[in-house]
Length: 102
Image 1: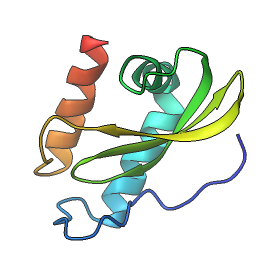
Image 2: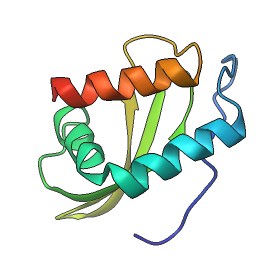
Image 3: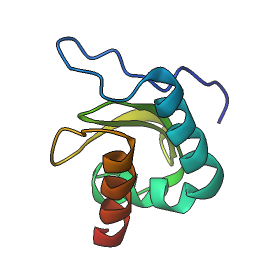
Image 4: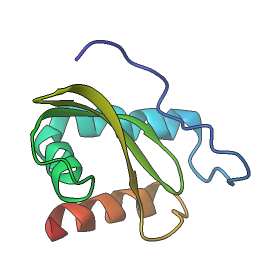
């Protein structure tokens, strides 16, 4: 997949417990080391059964945006978290729990 945008979603009226550097670091780590988990999130939580590839392109306290490649072409899917993230450690623990639940 081509293209990259900042890993901070500009959600109006949302406190940002994750600064831009932290969000970028999480996105980069997930894209480099956990591509299989991103595909699984898109399939199980995004309702897209034909996902071939996924990249995390944004992350905020309420969820993550994934850029996915499907059989019908590229698209973006929003995966909400089950709670508002408090900090980077909460983001890590939440992503791990989501991966285990898939």
